[in-house]
Amino acid sequence: MSLAAGVFIVVMSFVTAAISGVFGMAGGLLLKGALALVLPVSATFVVHGILQLVANGWRAILHRRHVSWRIVGIYALGAFTAGILVGFVVYEPTRATLYLLMGLVPGLVWLPNGWVKVDASRPGQAYIAGLSVTGMNLTAGVAGPLLDVFFVRTALTRHQIVATKAATQVFSHLMKIVVYGAPLFASGGKGVPPLWVFALAIPLSMLGTAAGGIVLNRLSDVDFKRYLRLILTVIGAAYLVQAVRLYMG
Image (cartoon, rainbow, N blue to C red):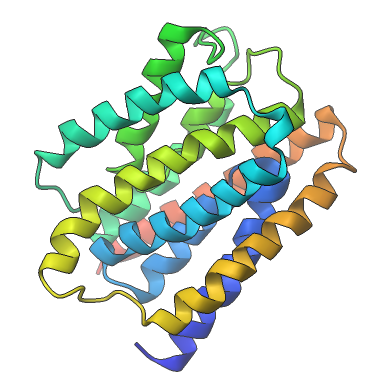
């Protein structure tokens, strides 16, 4: 890996962690696309999983008093189920397909609230959230907008939403590391960045998460949802354009 690529990953780790610190997602989607520019597809899943696990875990710790641990516990069971199921399937999308899937995922934020009536605060639906969100994470690489579908109808505040979603994503990204990391490292870890990249990116992602939390405190619930939808739409559109470029050669 070149020095420029390593520095790029480090910088994007901070920027995307800050974005996720504000909105609870979007940063992960942006980071995944950034990694796909400089890493092999299989390595993006592992590196993204490691960096996002740290960012989400630190965000959950910072906002731990707002976490709904009952939702997290049931979600974790669904996440483990998805990891076991996908672990039996050999799957690795092409770079073009990866951008296509990532570009389509943000479209979920435009689903009318009345179309999908799910609520993560209900035990059965928290399990389904863990199963489906982790399953999408293991195929498309990201699933923030799908996770958000399970939270838009809850009675949680924006702080509770960000904190609880962060805690649930620890398990989704853990499954990503296990499912893709085991065969990757068994074959020599081709494409995985050197340790110095992680040594810089991990603390910077924690710093970005803390910085995002400061901005979150200044947002109203209305602005929180409006800006989140706008950011996701822009990122999704950019990924669809990139997918078309790659498919056309």
